[in-house]
Amino acid sequence: MIKVALTTHNNHFVSLLVTGHANAGEYGQDIVCAGVSLAVQGGCNALKDDEDGEGVYELERREGYFFLKAKKELSSHDEIVIETIIAQISSIAEQYPKSVKLERK
Image (tube, rainbow, N blue to C red; front, side, top):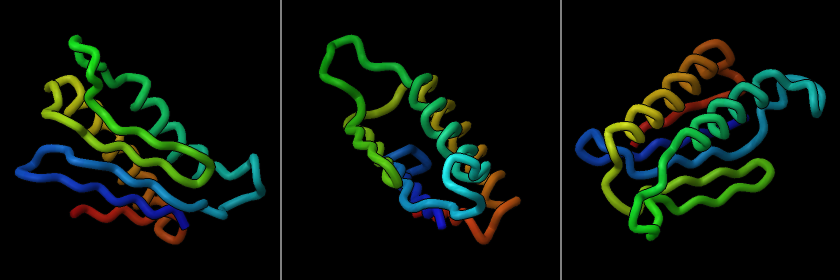
């Protein structure tokens, strides 16, 4: 099962942790895993770094593990990107509840 933990504070993004595997198909052919990976990776590609070069995010990723944490307040653009990632994951979790669980903290 893929477990997704979204942490917010006062309706603002704090962190996103995605762990596990969907196990909804053979390795390399698991559409649930592919969907979650696409939502997360594609969304991260749309996030913008700050102009002072200090970085907005702490990011760690490896197979079966993804962690994204805001180090400072996000731009409205990035808040929308994060909301889009969560909407996509939420949709997948609704369709495949045995494979994906989304928890909001």
